[in-house]
Image (cartoon, rainbow, N blue to C red; front, side, top):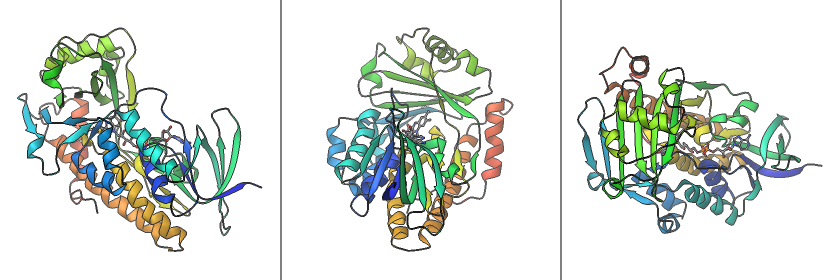
Length: 381
Ligand SMILES: Cc1cc2nc3c(=O)[nH]c(=O)nc-3n(C[C@H](O)[C@H](O)[C@H](O)COP(=O)(O)OP(=O)(O)OC[C@H]3O[C@@H](n4cnc5c(N)ncnc54)[C@H](O)[C@@H]3O)c2cc1C
């Protein structure tokens, strides 16, 4: 007979780790997934994240990890001049430039320390739902060693990121709204490292937009965001190509590129499109983090959303396990509200850039802006 659990969380990124940590004191929960084999892009955490981190009881441990405060933000967006914003003026305090491996590890450690079972390396492959059964999901996983594992659970939580694997297995439709990709490299520090430490830079360019930041151990992230079908993707296949294209296409980012060196190594390519599940929950399943709603990196909200949906999702999961039939529909309703607000805010930000309306990248964003007009403003409750 298969082992029985209350909850299986598929995906051990930030969202999965947080919901598993929150559920561990209430029910039996297993957290399944792989830890990334290399560096992960996505290191800006807004100051507002101190609230969910305190709610999780992890604030002091987070501070002790030595992430770098993000003291300022410089952007060239909608105009060639740079606008500098000082974090001291932000009512939520400065944000953080994370060491992602340490940050994700902290959240996973919290889950296991609180009693979640860690199925390291196990990936969800199939899930069958038997309506009316006490443990309606029969889940099939494959361990890192290729050993099949079968589990039964009462609630299946999809925290598998953009793959939205469990939601798809449950029959949910998953929508993408654009074709954004991020071409990126971690380059050794340039000459004037100190001058740029703690500053995030964003710059719009004819084919897309650029981002750069110096991560805690000193390397500089250079990232270019464009649509997957744009010719610029070909120009930036290697680190040297990416750096050369940045020097050709930008002013603000070009200054940070001074003294940087790159080789003919391939760049990292990450999917960065906005994506959402048509419903963030269904019969005996729910999605959190990117699996429910994946943000354009321009929003810099993905990790914050993972923390929040992990925390808030846990409350809905517990209510569902306690027999509240409205708990999962209410989760869908909640995520729908966040999505509508996100779409409107993102469209408004892209619409601030009007210099290249005939370039396909920007023309498409202006179309999205028209479609998104009318949604409510962003709010987390
Ligand atoms: C280019 C880029 C830049 C970004 N920059 C930022 C930023 O600066 N700030 C910010 O806040 N956010 C940023 N983000 C977003 C942020 O990285 C994500 O929102 C965040 O990682 C989502 O966490 P998650 O736990 O939902 O998903 P993930 O971090 O994607 O974790 C999902 C996990 O599930 C696992 N998995 C997949 N399939 C299965 C399966 N079948 N079974 C079990 N496990 C599975 C995966 O291996 C992965 O480990 C960025 C994203 C991109 C693409």
